[in-house]
Length: 148
Image (cartoon, rainbow, N blue to C red; front, side):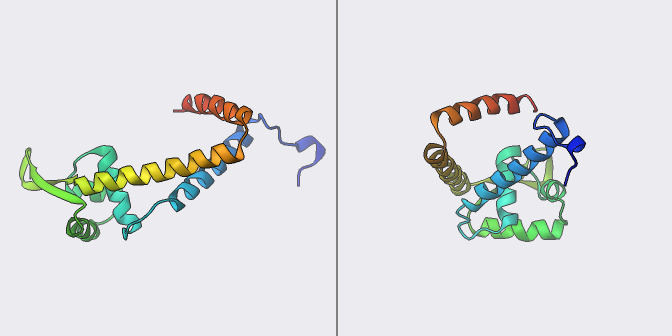
């Protein structure tokens, strides 16, 4: 409990930073709950999302990026390949390596997942927020964009 001379101000940068991080964590968690995993593990989803965001990668580059051993990544990639989510092609810069890319199945799954989460969020915004509150959120988004 804070004393009278230690009250937090809503515009205090440290207080805002903590509150913003907490709100972002809760939103991310809730959006993750909307994912139709389709039998995919969190590790498999992480690899699909990374390849979508960063593009084709070798197995070793994926392992480094995901912070796992090459053996662990090999198991994840093998399963994704069996399920039809990944394609392999020769690495043009290193004939001994293969580049992993997303298959059309993975691209389709990602699109459906994004649409499902966007639909959920749009429904929440429409049902729980007034037009004025949505305007405030739009203003806040413009401000948040300045952080990055």
